Image 1 (cartoon, rainbow, N blue to C red):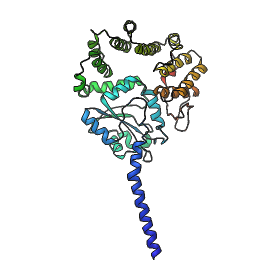
Image 2: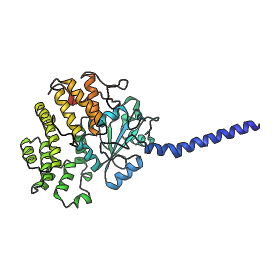
Image 3: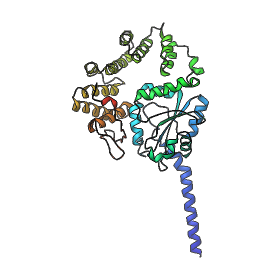
Image 4: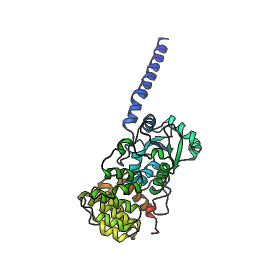
Length: 367
């Protein structure tokens, strides 16, 4: 009888220890080891639903939920395969990152109960506003959901939407709900017209930005005018504005922005000419290697493109553009007609897994 009593006591003690471990250690560990804690894309992630709600309420922002149906990898900063593809495709675009940080509160969580970032309450919220998510097993890749602080669904976007489409959804959302697009008190109080113009540019209010820049003659003003001209596909204004920039740091930027401009009109020779001799000290060097690789890829020099991308990803694994490069490298190695499914693994320099059924439109053969 005494032995049985001791056995029961030991079992109770073991259960109490297990409960304490879960309550005391597991939750803080999930916070400290969140796969996006050291995210290099520049996105200001939040790491709990409560934080997302409070920040959205306090700062008059829109919650941006990124649910995933397959658990996080639980391997350093690795995410679910679909989220890895989404981040590589979308979150290297500075326009998207800056707009998120201005007006959105991004929160990533698992719908898989065994995932390290499982959030039951967040799941209940998204399932109440998105009927498809009530049957998560039939939707392996949930969309990005945009909600108010009280949980009202405002819009959604596909996980695999191209960057321009993702941006379009966000801008339309602000157009439809201008109460979130208005300048904050601190933004309104900015005395420097160029600084305020940058705010409007981040919010995609290009006309307002240009009005503030009309009488400005600094390098920063001319640089921003050039970016706005690119957005409007006005190449003459782009050249004229960039020609007036004298700041050496912005000269670095202009080299890359011009190559992106060449890419928009598929001027492959222009990309090669502007980027082959690029200074490795340029802070955007890795981004440049992405576009240089594209130029060679579409010139039929696929092996050279792969070498450029592989070297860039290896040399700069912490640069956010290495994510785009790594994803593109794997898709290019597979070939244009082969999808990446959860059961397959595309070649990856960074050791990541990507779920990317739509591929990268930058690799499409038609120019």
